[in-house]
Image (cartoon, rainbow, N blue to C red; front, side, top):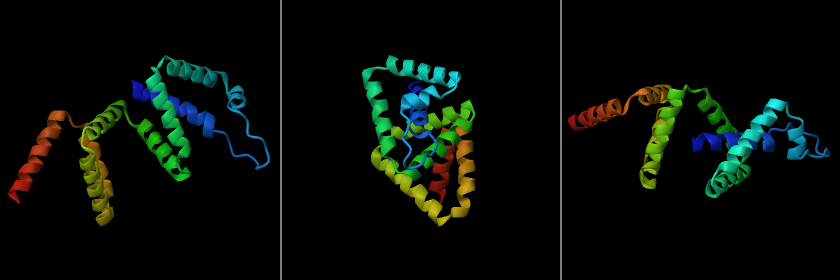
Length: 166
């Protein structure tokens, strides 16, 4: 729930902060209030609802959202674009696929930083050595996400068994 609220709040902040079209160098940049006034009524109400959600958050969660927004503002434009693309791709997923992604993120967060770094390095090395296998890897990841915990555990055990028999 909190993750969806944070994503929604970041979306609102992005709409207000970076959503304005590019302007001539000498034209004054409209304020957030001026941009808000130009929005259609349904978007205004959606923003008001998000503001109510934000105000209902604990001070700690509000501080976390503000810190995330500050980090966003400091990102290079290429990184922002990459993250926007990832968010659009995530939003295209079915609810089941989104839940699977959230579960994977929780699992990864449970790993030690060293283990996460090791896995990241192994994937990068693999893709560097085998760029043609990227699509197959993505398909395997999609299948993995659709498995239940029990099916994943069985797959892990089969993999371990294959490694022992080599």
